[in-house]
Length: 487
Ligand code: GLU
Image (cartoon, rainbow, N blue to C red):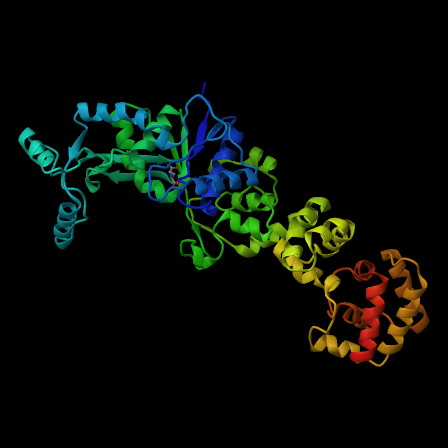
C-alpha cells in the first residue's frame, strides 16, 4: 500500500503572503485533499534579519482568509513540532554532528574578504564562482591558528565530485545537475544557525513529508538538498516545482505589475473564493472548458499531472472577470458587510448611518453589483444615491436634457411621484409605463433624460431600483434642480 501523502507549505516570514506563495499553499492543500493526505504549515524563520512576527501573522491570516486550513503545524500543533525553525535549533544539532563526524561536512574559517577574493580570481578566469574547498583538509595547527585569530567558522557541506544529481520532478520531468557546478555550500552560519537548505531537509524528513511542492525558484536548491538527504541516509521525497508567475509583459511578476500580495487584493474588495479560483488556474488546468470552481470542487478535481511547466501569466482582467462573477452570486448580506467600509471610506455615510440605513444600503449594493468587479469600485456606482448635486457627467448626458420634450416629461414625472405614498420599484415601473402611455415617448427618449436628471449618468444600474432607492424627496429635488438649472 502507498504511504499516505503528506505535503507542506513552509513560508519564510519575510514579507506578506505573495500571490505566488498563496498559489503554492493552495496547490499543496489541494494535493493533500485530492490524495486523502495531510497538509502541514511551518514557518522557516532562520533568516533572522528579514523575518518578523508581523509577517508570520499576516501570512497565517491570509491563508485562513483564503479558506486554506491545515492538519498540522503552526497554530494547530501536532506531533512533529515545534513548527518554527528557530525553535527547532536543537533538533538540527545531531544531524550536523553526524555529517561532521562522518567527514561529510567541515568547519570553514575563510573570511568574507577571502571568499570575495577567491570569487574575483574565478571570475577573471571565466569560471563560475564557487567555494574552492580551501578549508576541506585543514591541519590541527591551522585550525588552532584560525581560532587564535578569533575567527568564527561556518560549517560547509562537502559536495561529492563528479556526481550527477537528478531531480525527478513531477511537473518538469527529470532535471539533471552536475555536482561539480556546486561548490561546498554553507549549512551552518558562523552564528550557529543552520541555513534554509539544511534545515528544510531535516524538517521535511522529521515531519514525514512525502512530496515537496514549491515554486520553481527553489529548483536550483533541490540538488543541494538531495545531497544532504543522501548524506544523512534519508529517503528523498518526491518533488514538484511549480512554474513562475509572470506579469503580462512576461517578466517575473513584481510590484511594478500592480498588486502582488494577497492582502492588497483583500483590501480592494476581492472575494477569497475568487482569488482561490483564479490562483488554481495559474498553472493548473481543468479538463473541460468550465473555469469557475469553488474550493471544495477544486479539492476533488486537482491533479498535479495537469500542472503545466510553462510559466503562468497573471491576467488581471481574468481575475476581475472571475471576481465579478462571484460578486454577482454572493449572499447580499455578506456583500453589504464587505461593501460598507468602502462606502464609509468614500465619505458618503458614517458607520452609524450605515447601521441605521442597512436595508437601503443592501438595496444599493444589490442594484449596482452587476456594474463592478471588486468592491473598491462600488463607490463610483453608489455615489448617485448620496451626492447632493447632480450634474450631467458628459456631453452625451447634457444633450439628453436638451431634447424638447424633457421639461414636460419631468414635470409629469414629478406630479406622479408626488401622488404616490411610497416609491417602490414596482411603483416606479408603473409610473414610467403610464408616462409612456400618456405621452407616446418611449425607449431611450423616455429613460435617458430621466436617468440623467436623477443621476447625471446616461447608463447605470436598473433605473426602477435607482429611482426607488433615491426616494421621493431626492427625486423631486433633482427634478426641480434640473428644470431650473440644466435645461
Ligand atoms: N521558506 C521557503 C520560501 O519561503 C520555502 C522553501 C520550500 O518550500 O522548501 O520560499
